[in-house]
Image 1: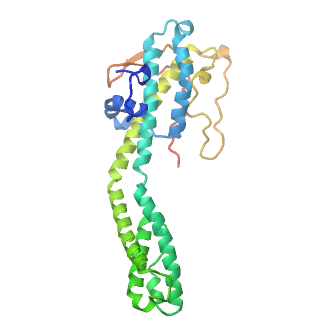
Image 2 (image 1 turned 180 degrees about the vertical axis):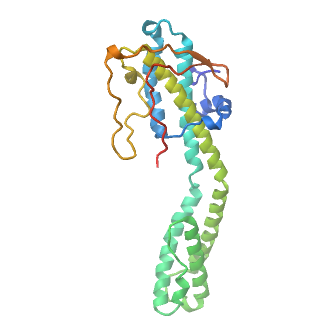
Image 3 (image 1 turned 90 degrees about the vertical axis):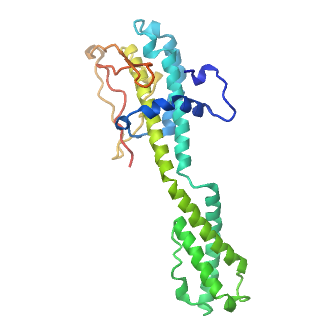
Length: 306
């Protein structure tokens, strides 16, 4: 499988993220649902952290024989770093798909913008006509002006109906044009129809959310593997964070207090790290580093923000 960064030509209609996502799709689909981690950080920031760290990680990988000559390329070689890069670009693309799936269409937004303006104008004119006794004041009680697409559609439908019924009495006595009433009725129907279509698309949103979680899990696990390997190689220097920063740096507890770092341990009292081992990637047979026992965990708990 060729790396996105390997120089392979990319179609003008495809982004690096889409290419990477499609290359890795089978691996993402094979991840067990029970192993997915909760997304407890800003996804865009996580992607930026990984991509920003890649130049230093690549440099470290190239100099790995000097830092830890007994570690082989399967632990932190070029293929491992390239795979991490593809995971980052794939997550960026999957996150974009997730956001797009949950957004209303441009047509709906345009209709809503026009509908709000028309509803407010018609309601102001209708209220004046009601005060002058030209329409029944209680006929406007169903106009709620509440937020929400469905409420807007209902308001437009009510106003169009009330004012059309009263048209023989109010024509020429207000600034309302009959075409505006027809537009209000039409917009009400079109908005409620668009909302219905959008709600039927809920499974699409759920699917995009599930896939984003899978890509996020893959990136986090691989980045953690890289950080653990660097921590092992730079155990005495204790500078792994300067090469591959934590995705959870700067997070705050729900109470609003800063997450306190663990108390420092004198270098002489530090346990010797255990060399990382290599495990088979169940998806495609590639090798990955296993968790390093004896090295402090590099991630904070995965907590879903409220």
